[in-house]
Length: 98
Image (cartoon, rainbow, N blue to C red; front, top):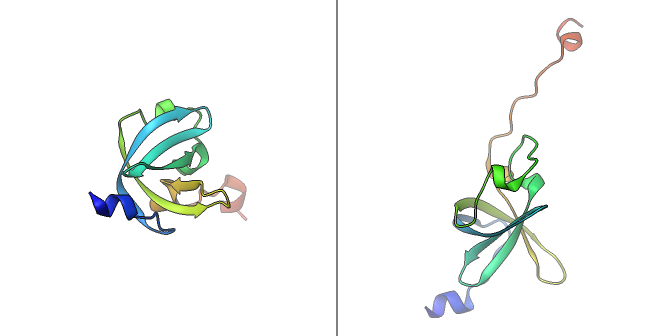
């Protein structure tokens, strides 16, 4: 109990069971631990384009994220995409025949 009260989020730390607490047009808020929440921007969900957060996660889902940064106001930003393997680049027809 006391550990959760004094724990601080660490940049680069992976949170295996972050809970989605709220969806927005631009992303989702996730609870890392205790009352510590971070923002997961829609561009940081997957390597493919994500049009709607509702298509990927729901409130109550548990997701794996990494803490990427903390701004000067103490707001935390996380990424799911940074933990996924980067897909191989597909070559166009022109590049294959060059």
